[in-house]
Length: 97
Image 1 (spheres, rainbow, N blue to C red):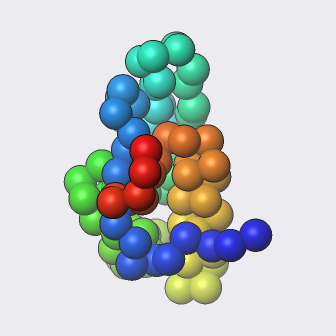
Image 2 (tube, rainbow, N blue to C red):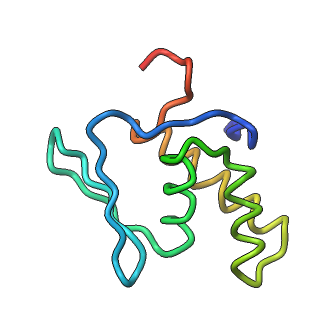
Image 3 (tube, rainbow, N blue to C red):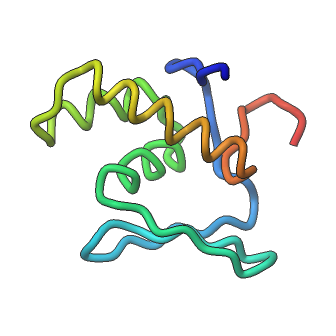
């Protein structure tokens, strides 16, 4: 399984709404009503992507805000971004949508 390039430009697919809650966040596919619940770290990653920042930017923010080592943060961000791409929630900027 290939990992997403940590410097890749990613974007939320059109029609995906992000809402933060006291427990993390929720992604809603406005087209079919499907939703995904995220913990605080997942919400941080999705927020970074929605703001046009790279996965590596999200790693740096995780390191600044949480007690986690770099290897774990990088692996977690890569795994989440890969899952979001496979679920077609996130697309690579410039890639066919």
